[in-house]
Image (cartoon, rainbow, N blue to C red; front, side, top):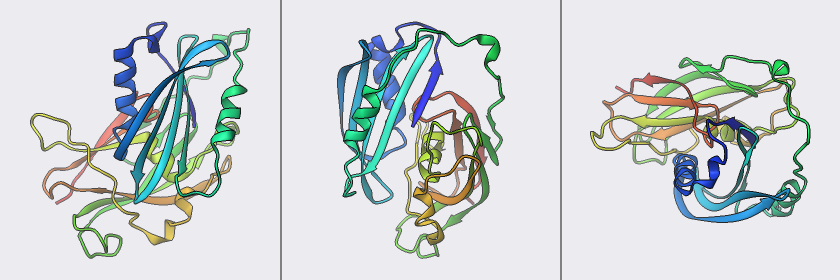
Length: 257
């Protein structure tokens, strides 16, 4: 995933406290984060920061790499997620991507930038590269279809993701795009934000499609679930332009009673 976000100050990532807050936001949606290593590197003779970590995602151990650097009036991010048990090693490919980054001399003409309204209204998330449409949601109790092996009730979402025709420089699969776009909270703790964790895949029909790369102009369906801490407090789904950057696009409450 490649993303860019404008910020109010130059040298944004040079502040260690800002970097710590930034990476905390990135990892907040992950399950069982095992370790995270920050390394200062160079991208085209400019300072950059690399974060390597491992986490659990839907019962799978995954490796995550994130490289961020200040660029013009914002922050540029390159991220890669792979399954640890995958027989193919993509680290060499990621290194080649990083080595290929060159900063152009020319600047983007402001008049040429198309300004679009991005939002989330509880059904549609309209983002820069894709639209996610929530087609259904329901509570699944332990033992019910979609939560056969869980010991806790979950709130399951079914959704379609459509990648825009012009998006040819980024690749998305349904569940990675969802996780980078949404955070789920049950506001039942007066002292802290209660971010709820990802549950098992609620629909076996999406076992393959959840990781399929979506073609430009294509639409793929998938599903995801969150473990509920109670059956009283609504789940608030908060949408972001990307889970790395954290600019909120909207939020919506889903009842669980």
